[in-house]
Every structure is written in C-alpha cells, then in structure tokens.
Figure 1 (tube, helix red, strand yellow):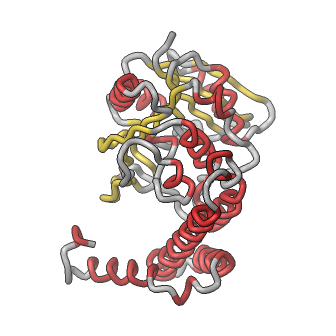
Figure 2 (cartoon, rainbow, N blue to C red):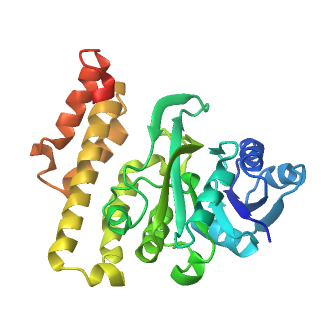
Length: 313
C-alpha cells in the first residue's frame, strides 16, 4: 500500500497543473498522485496524458472541489491523504516529514504545518501562516475559527473518513474547515512548526474560489450553527457554546473590517471593501464601535511607517 496519496482536484487550469504535480512528487518518497479532472472543457485531459506516474480520474459533470476531493479519496490507496489545489505547491520533503509525525502519534487524525504565503506569481509575501496552538485537542479552537488550517498544510489519516464521513459538498469553499472540525471532534491533531507548502493567495478578482472572502466568512458564521450541534459541542454547557459563537462572530467581523480598511480601500477596490463591511455589519452590528479591528489597523500602519519594530506587532 502506498504511504501517501496526494489528491489534486482540477478544473480548466492545465497551465498550473504540471508544477503542482512536480511539487507533490518532490514532497515524499512514497507518494501516489491522484488527479481528479472535474469536467474540464479545455486541454486538461491532454496535459494529464503527458504527465507520468499519476492516477487520472475524470468526471463528466462538475462536482465542485469537495466532490472532486471525495472522488479522489475513493480512488486513492494511501494510508495518509493530502489535498493539494492545482495552484498551490508542496515543499520538498514535506510529506515525508508529516507522515513521520503521524506515525509517531498513532492517535492523531491529522498533522498540520505552516504555509508560506505568495502572490499570484508564487513570490513569497513575507507572511508565514502557522497554528498558534500546540498539538492535542484543537476542536474548540477550530470551531471558533481560531486555528488556521487548510488542506495545503495538512496530512490526514485516511481512516478518519471512515468515522466522520466525506467532505460536505453543500458547504462550498468551506468544506475543508468543516471536515477538519469534524475530525478534530474525535481525534487529536499534531502541530509542527515547519512550512510545508506555498499558498498562492487569491485577489478579489482572481478566479480562485477563496477570493470571495466576505461571502466565504459569512458561510462560515452560518455553518458554525450546524457544527455546534455535533455531539461533543451539544454536550457542552450552553454558556460555552454561546461564548464560542460570540468569539467567532467578533473575530470574523474584525477581520472583515480590517481587510476592507487596510487592503481594499487604499487601493480603491470598492466592491470587495463594501462586501466586507456589509457582512461585518450583518453579523455583528456593533462591530464598528469595538476597538479590535482598529487597533490591528493602527499597529499595521505604524509598522509600515517604521515607527516601531514590525516584529513586535
């Protein structure tokens, strides 16, 4: 049996695919690469025929990212599963590193590493996203969106899907957060500090699914109500559930306000700015009078002017 299966869903982006495949190949010594062609209508099938040592699966009707990932799970043979978007890149040796971590922690459901953020041309922005929590129980942190985890930076024990089920196709663009939360309800997680991948950040106008950040976070806030009905959450005290809900809503609202003020408005990107502010107001009408987002904005502006050491922000 293969040690790691890397599942790459793709739709009409054949120019990006070979680089993603090569990064997956260099990330581990015992890797199976499963490409799920999600009803592409361009040269994707031809490009895949030119790629060696891959398992190619094509579907004729578009399944969406979650559906394509599920098909890849069924087609995979590895003990561990990694999801890789066709525009992201794995770092060399990263899958071997994470597989060793899971082997050393047989009770863990998945291992999470750090991500190097890049622009659309894969140039690092200087930002590295890493979980701030230690290994162990991260269920409540995930539930309130206080644990940054994405498919790119994780390796999952395949048996988890037998217990918690497959990815939810009905929660578009947040299916990854949903599945990690459901896994974390039953399994501890391993956290490692090393970067394991390059994440190509979307722009407000890119064709990446995560570019519509405001609507995505609105779906997160709505879907959290469903996740709070999971057995472990439902069994907790009502006060804990309420506090978890409040912290998430505050966190999302402050993030949307800060992003609008710090990124979109200075560039006169009015449409995404208005979308962010509208969702923040809808989720939390008093978010505009709380200091959290403005304190973060002030610190960021001060750091950019060089008045304080950026490392302390």
